[in-house]
Image (tube, rainbow, N blue to C red; front, top):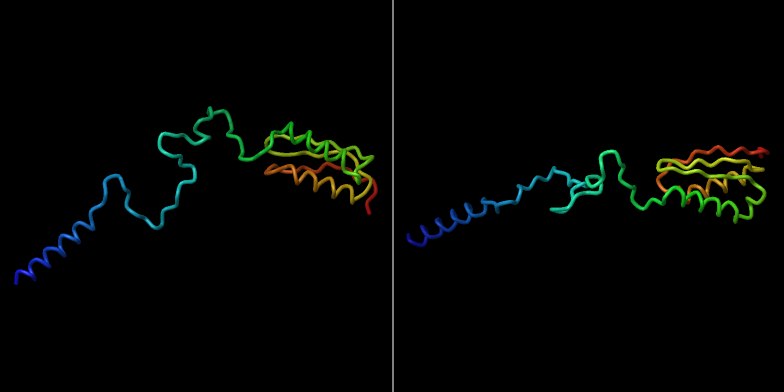
Length: 133
């Protein structure tokens, strides 16, 4: 009888102990989504560190003046684009490529160069093709 009572008491104690949670640990919710903007304790996310009128910089995005220089160099060094008049202007949201090319092949290559440098920016194509082939 003592063994039965001891076993029953141990079982009840185990169940009660298992239902208790450690302080500071939120209950597990399988439907909850992790917050991608949450920063480690005592740290702010980049958006929280910026003044309210300043946009947080995009991850791995090249500065606009650098993109313009890189694209102009790419246009100048691409043999197929010799003799064309191409210019790229960039801001944080878009890259505008303008100018004149002789044919559709040059147009396609110019756009491929821009796509390789634009990152997440929108590409605005203002290139004029002289001869449609």
